[in-house]
Image 1 (cartoon, helix red, strand yellow):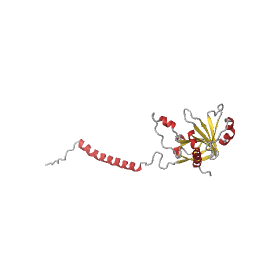
Image 2: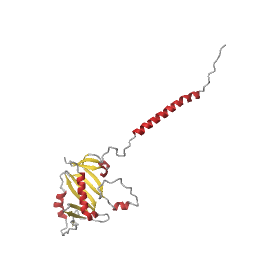
Image 3: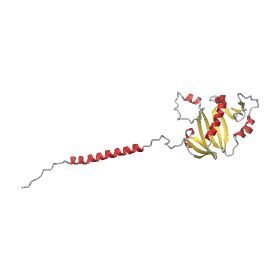
Image 4: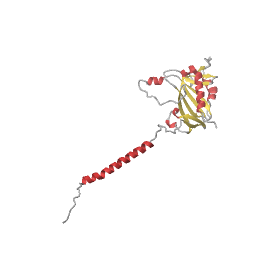
Length: 235
């Protein structure tokens, strides 16, 4: 007599499900492992990187400067090494690099234009051009009005003649602390001053509102401090 054992019948769907479940569990475990590794290795530094320097060594005209990255106005200039020109700005009177630019709306644009709270600085190679001191001593006197000028609080103002290239400007000068500034006159926009000095192979050009000359000692001191702070090792 032949005896047939009765094995339990499994449908194809049941067999497929039995294979899929271990695969799904393995996939979930692998995903969890990847997520854990990614979490542990995910960078925690800010946009500039943990080791990004606060200052950059920049050579202009063969003269080394250490420049705060946040003070450099154009991103294309934010790199170390030789550069022909670099533009910066600093908050005044703190002389700290400015933070992120504020969003200007239609309601705040007028105040943003009229209120200047920073001093601007351009550093450029001079290539042996006439120095600022020589220009003040030999060029400007040709164009100044001959009217006598009386110093006020140690600062002397002389007007340029209207028929000269500097006809809309005035020249301010002081001996102690030393200051020479060429300033446009107030009009539709506030007057601005330009003061230059030479450091090695570079000329430093400072720009600031003319209204700051009411406390010109502080402005002159700020430019002196920035010149010293930004100058790199003389070697």
